[in-house]
Length: 409
Image (cartoon, rainbow, N blue to C red; front, side):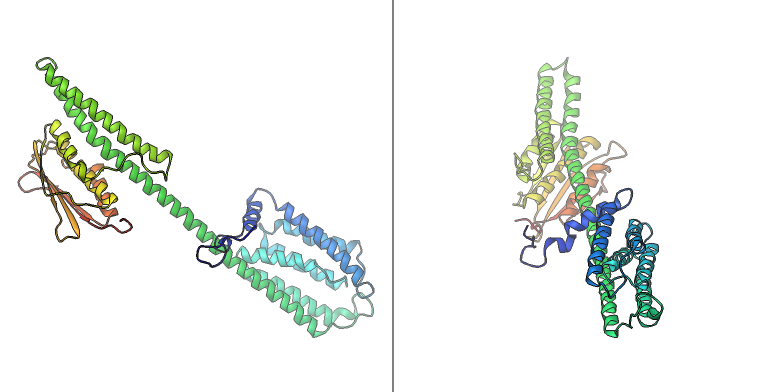
């Protein structure tokens, strides 16, 4: 399989997020129990490699006897606990390898178990312990090869050359360097995985917030109109059936429109990434808001012409006006409201919605989710919202939105 590289060149994808085999290794280590498969493979390789090395070094080193094989199996079996007790396993494998070399057995892959144990210790954060275990192994090898060889098998053995010690030291340094590199990369991969998971959670939270805000704006406005018309219909049902019928017709039309907008939001949930079936509402539908408010008994006066806005800003401006008018219907005794659109200095759109009051409840002006939703919409575009009671007893909502939004045409 070809390596997947990032667009424009650079290192392959796995270099940033970890190679696939590393994830499988981690899965094995995280599962309950011990890493049997990798341990069995390493132990089998050490036994086979040491048998081959014994044939190659026949006459120079001692033959593999049962005690040698016990030492090789022991150093391999210790690896089963390399994740739970990394320090003990590092020193245990180093001790087993030191005894193996001190007994004069052939050089071979016995060092692999020590390397793997120390590698696991470094990656687990026990760096000094791993270095100490490798240092102990090297010191033991120097002691055996340059002093104790006179009394240890095989008979007639001579002192090892210092060139050989330099080679051994080089291998130890290479093991330490590789272990440190793996530790650094693993920590980096763990941080990147955590950051990606956090970013995914943040995107999910933002999407849930957006959907909740959209549903609130749609339902709050529609249900407010329906509630007013239902009250009118009930009041005039006996006295003026024609007017009651008009109210019921308005309820039917408004509920159908609300269902359509809710369905559009839910379609976005079911098929994220697909283009919406209907365009998002914007300030071009401001006359509809005025008409709907009129059906709820609220006269709306509009000053200024709606400018052309990017889709996101256009939707936000529409929802802000919609929510402000809904709050007038629900929380104000005023039957008159004004919507003023002003381009200001040419870079921002100023939306001002006023009513004459007075308030009809403690939550006048929409101090709950509606006002919070308006502020969130404006903040997402780099704009601001100011809302509060006027000195003459009415209520005012002032929104300042940028005419050009970054990332939108």
